[in-house]
Image (cartoon, rainbow, N blue to C red; front, side):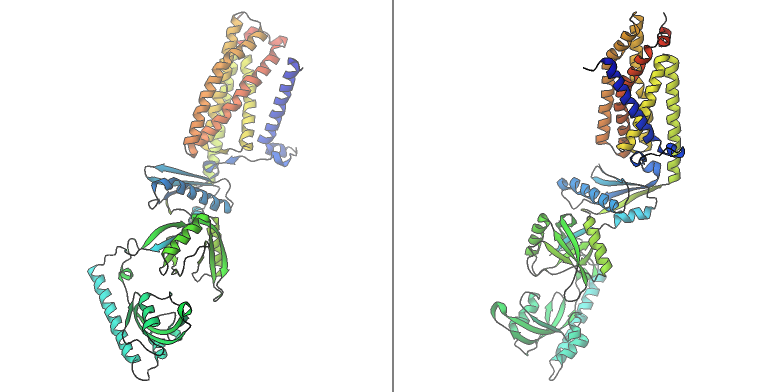
Length: 558
């Protein structure tokens, strides 16, 4: 069994090792200057926050108006995660990204220490794409002004007149339909081919066009009347047909004169409807090439939730357009031919290879679940941060000296032991700040300085109790033991209540207050050890020496 004397020696050795290691951690530059080499794991820098290191402070407001109330919190958290991944990809160390809610407004606060180019910071976040799939609203609300309505009517009447003239021309004996289509048709996809649409099965054209091409015309016939569709006026000629039943295909040419609708003059307030399918359900994005044109396109693969949602969307929109929106703009509006159940979609937009790769990279980094808008930006220069660090260090040194002088003058020898314990506390807490690591901010340093003063609270309680024991004529070793023993309940209760407050601040406050609470909590935890173990060990060791047995040294008159 280890004797009390040997136990004290082991504790003293452990404290000495801790103190020496902490000093090496705290001041590696000093040892390098005097030629003492240190292993790499001891050369750890302090992690400085935005207000000390300098950097960029951004506040974004999230638009959650299209989401149900129950989904808004998770969506904003998703924004936070995406921004964090996006910023980390650019190598920004320890970004601080938090979400807050005030009333019905959700905000994302981004602190990027070391990033002083605010445009670069905004670019990091703003370039993360918002991917959405939307379906057409069959009844959008569109209101035209009288002038717009007149322009619409005039344009469509002129289109009809032009189409009627072309119809009369192609019905003339010997007319070359293909040549007339090549020079007059306004269909960019077929005009250069003389209006030839090739052999196609049913289901690819709008019903008005398909009915004439497949059912009403015989091979070699031209429609005697204009065919009106949502795209304009058509003159249709049937060139051939193949197969029968489900294998039946028809080959038609057409001349199209486009018309306009209300949408061309005034966009509807709800032209496209939110489907719930966004970048949050994206599993992977990759670049591939169209096998026919070799133009780069972006292949999207959805997770299980997105796969089921995409299948449902395409199933109910067969023959209708589904728009792919990127950052609020429709970049592709394909018409659904059949239900897509494999959870894969393609974005085609005449991309260059670099553009397609960049889009895929950004989508893989994370698409924003909801749009965000920058509402505040602030840049803090490194010089201001350095001034703050210097002033904070000066305040800490002054505070340490003031506390030390008070303890020595008022408590004499116990005060000196408290100062030694306080120095141990200071080097240990600085080492912990490096090892955890704790991001130091001005508020965090304030918490550290406050903890210096609180670090001697426990010693004051103990020393006052020690004086009372000595006044009761108890011998010094017993008085020291009793002083520490009887002051412990008060020390424990006081520090526990402060720790509870710190944990509440850490859990429910933002970065500024949280930094203060974290450093204060760490300080209190270390203080409990230094004030009760280190101080007691030093004081009992000194009290055994005969020159230090005088009661005057402990503030007690004989």
